[in-house]
Structures are given as C-alpha cells and as structure tokens.
Amino acid sequence: MAELGPDWVPGPDGIPYRRAARVILLDEADRVLLVRGHDVDQPERSWWFTVGGGIDAGETPRQAAVRELREETGIALVEGDLVGPVCTRQALFDFFARLCRQDEEIFVARVDSATLPPLSHDDWTDVEADVLDELRWWQVDALEAVGIEVFPAGLPALVRSLLPGWDGVTRNLGLARET
Image (cartoon, rainbow, N blue to C red; front, side, top):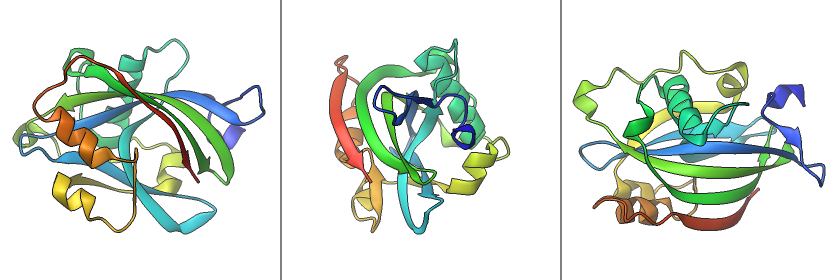
C-alpha cells in the first residue's frame, strides 16, 4: 500500500484503513472552503469535499487538522482556532483504485479572507497532486445546487447548523458509502 501513504494500514477485514481529521473552514461571508478531487481510476468523476487527511503517528486529530489545512491550502491556523470536533463519521470510498475505510473527526474554524494568503497547493504530496484538482470557496446556496457529489453528504445543512456557532454536541454522521 505504499502509494496510499504510511497512514493507511490494512484493517481486520483487509480493507485499507486510516483515521483522519477534516476542517469545515468558513470565512466572514459564511463561505466554506472545499477541495475538488477525483480517483485515479475514474478521472471523469469528481467531487467536492472538506479539507483534511490522515492523522500521522503521534499526532492528535487537532494537530492533524491544522497540518492538513496548511499543507492543502497554505492557510496556517493553530489548534486553538479549531472548534469541536463538531462531528465524526465513518466512510467507505474508492481511493487509488481500491476500496478504503476512514474514520474522521471534523472540526470547524473561521477565518477572515482579507488576512489570508492566496490559496496554495505548493505542499501537496505526490498523491494529492495526482488526485486533487482545485480549491474553491463556496456559498452554501451555490453548494446545494452543484452538479457533482459533495462530501460529507448533507454538508450544506451541516454548515448552516454551524453558522450561529457550535452547540457543543459532537454528532456522529454514521457510515457513508461513497463509491
């Protein structure tokens, strides 16, 4: 499984597995930053999803969320900027032409877009460069009307529920099959 990276390990059922941390990043206009990507075996199919990725050995989910946000977007936050985890989920999805399983903790953070550096993919790994296509800020209404899949499912409603602030309850979004 070298092409998947060292954070992917065979689960008890043989399916590659990892723990991950994700960030719902909101700006002052209530836009959410998402990544569009595809799988290597289905380049014609793409989808939007939250920034984030695998938790490295010795990392906490918060540390991983901050690191992944910086690596994938160029935006540097500190752990204290993250709220939550606001939700958790388990996902089964195709990645690198195989079925994978991932357990996620999802945080939320707010930024002022006027103080941000330009979005950057300079620190994308080789794998990310192969499967990630673009970064984009989305208004929630526009995200509801997008013509491709958005993950996690129900993200617009989740974002709307977080706009007034987090209520302190970590919700489990359950198991999603995204293949």
